[in-house]
Length: 342
Ligand SMILES: NC(=O)c1ccc[n+]([C@@H]2O[C@H](COP(=O)([O-])OP(=O)(O)OC[C@H]3O[C@@H](n4cnc5c(N)ncnc54)[C@H](OP(=O)(O)O)[C@@H]3O)[C@@H](O)[C@H]2O)c1
Image (cartoon, rainbow, N blue to C red; front, side):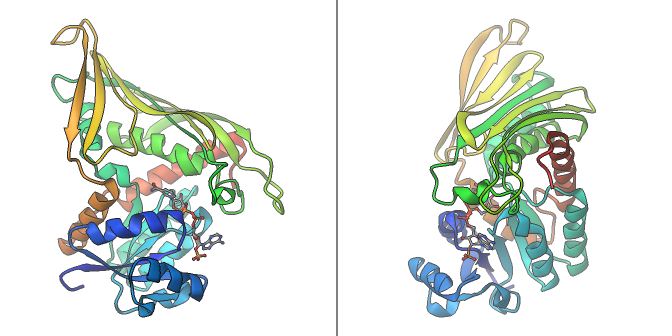
């Protein structure tokens, strides 16, 4: 690696197009290659980004590109682990889009591949790289004075009707490991684990199953409702859906108040707002106030900048591969309980 971390993107879909400019804006990063299963698609994507045709390549050829230090993996969920392992073995650093996998064993294999290759791996939970999340972590894990006291409950919802979107079929494909829990439920789960800084000791879940996609024998979970009890006795109560606009928010309920955001996973880069509701036992008395976080930056730009720093300084990136093992283990249990797993 020279002065900048040179990125390749694997996949040319929706998130690849959205995040490519963010990679270019991120400190210490450049974009040198885009890779697809289809050469024409790779060239068209390169051209749309103003990259030369030589920047486009076949997905297989990406493994051997000497002008690529790190790869952003944006293929469907079922391909996350195999591609992450192959890229790490080929000497690339990797950010793989969430969810890495619904199987703890596979997450362990990715961590082992990263350790063996001496490369940095991170699951792409971009919202972890925004000061709004830092505030929630200080409130939850560290009990930031003047906020909400010790956190007892996390309530979170991530429900969006994805059916009108052009790429919706991948989210409803059981074969490609779509479904509400993997696509959206992984966020509330990740938030609670991060904010509380501990693992669930008990999980509960129920789901509504979608009709199978043409050519598939099983349907994904269109909606999953799940709960987790953590070591500290704090509880997560969460809902996720891919066929209903049933709300997006997160609330930390503490002993002296509630901290709530309507944008837990997509905080505004310029002005993010949280609402603090103070109980009567709060040090400042009962009331409601708005907490504003100005210029927190774009979460994707922040994520890629942090990753380049981690590579340069040879230190761990957030989230770590071990964190992803805990995430996968909880998802494995939840999807096992709902009967919508693999
Ligand atoms: N962090 C976020 O905010 C966020 C947002 C959206 C999505 N995501 C994650 O990003 C990943 C991709 O999502 P997306 O919305 O970009 O999906 P998408 O539009 O369907 O794109 C996925 C791309 O993967 C490639 N691909 C390789 N093998 C494939 C296969 N067998 N079937 C279909 N496509 C295949 C395709 O590119 P080629 O045809 O060029 O190979 C396709 O364009 C998912 O894991 C999703 O969970 C994250």
